[in-house]
Length: 193
Image 1 (cartoon, one colour):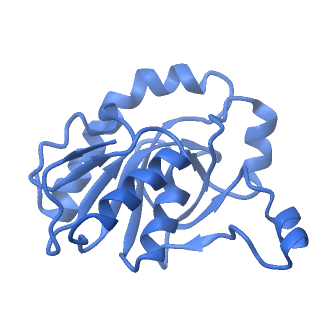
Image 2 (cartoon, one colour):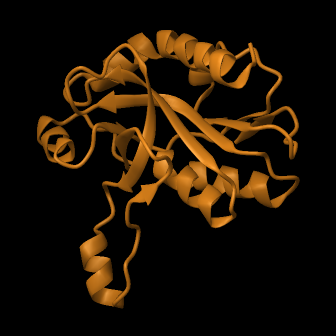
């Protein structure tokens, strides 16, 4: 976890997993680098939100794998996020309570599936494509933490790969370009360079 800048109650907090995704931000806004995966993301954001002033919103910027055709080359805002590696039906049967259901983070946008599995196997990709448009490894955890403490959250993703075979290599090859597009979005939408 690395916090760059100071969280302030009148400014958003930008949250990304790794430095490669933040490489071109060049912003005065505070940036939290959480590390990869749901546990790292949840722990980092919860620590920051519990230890000081709360930002106006949490803006999760990052790369995502596409589960459907036609999503390349543009920024996507997420409306719904779900955990794809949590068996919610079994947990509900065991406890009698709903666990880990989908979270709504915006009125319009795509559906994002979050899990600690880097989706590179075609069968896993096909199963996820029945549920979501995009896949990542942090979005659900960040949305869950932010919503629990009452801080608005936005999930903003740029497609780095076509989740499936070769996705790891495609991510490495495209992450710098993705970072440029994410930085341009921050400048256009948040008024920061």
